[in-house]
Image (tube, rainbow, N blue to C red):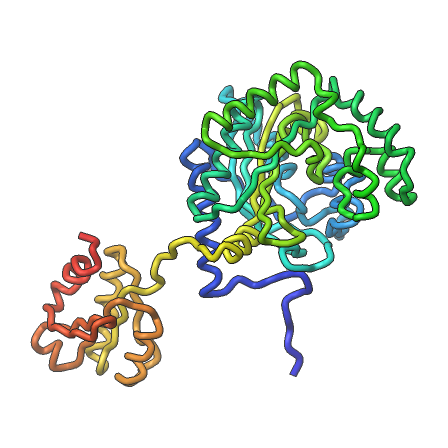
Length: 422
């Protein structure tokens, strides 16, 4: 028999593990919602040109990792490899920037796709939660987004996440640094592809992870040494706001991230318990991206946090989000009349905000009680014909084994009280 399997480099989310992923997404988005970020959702694929122009034609994402396809109508599309370009495109298309209320603050969650060599922490299909603040240039906005990410990590119980911080300058000081870096790179022993990349975007070479290249970059000039006065002051203010908020960070003058659109503030969250794939999220300011994809000048800043890598970080620290019970009450009917009565009761219990399940499939008493134990429920509600004739049900505490009779019409109220919901 031929059995299909998930494609290489992908993963399925199923209970009980899927509950952790949902809890991580909730923890990442909760601080954003409190800070006025509205939810955005974009298609899983976009025109190739959006990423070629926005992410950068010389990046590994565009040259090696994008999944592309040609439609029957001849359109060149790509599965989205990242979220920022898509969300900014959607905001521009909907003219959100013309509402007069800038910045436009958006958050999103979804799946992204890159053709990479699969390994622990690096998948071809992965999940992220992201946030973008579009249309304002303000150090406080950069600091706000970083603080919101830090709060998300703290709420999950993570304590070993490190924040790396850098500035990549702007269109005033970046060209001077670019020239100095290119001059340095021309003197290195690089392969033809890397040498060509150095001529297109030399900062991308600084992001090269190969040891043979990294060893030669030890004496490379740093952007921090070439910042103009405005960029230096902007970065000083971001650092001061983070410090005042009690956020610990490490200055990393070699941090460039993997995308071409970053300017000024650039940051990354890393966790040393993950091995080679230590980055669990990051972002920065991208003041020129709107113009790159055909929009007006709109200074913006954002980040994306990896859900799957954050789960790995939780595993590394041995912590995890508190998960709500999937089932608190399990109904066990004995006989057809009891099935109808307890099914109606389960519906009422759920409407009262209590997680409840039912012994489906006509199970016998013994098997139904085993299912109740396996469900993790706190209470089982058991009833047979004699109980219903007396207008009652049996309420069994599955932890202590104690069983008491309660009135059928008062069962919801009693369960609410015992579960501490009243």
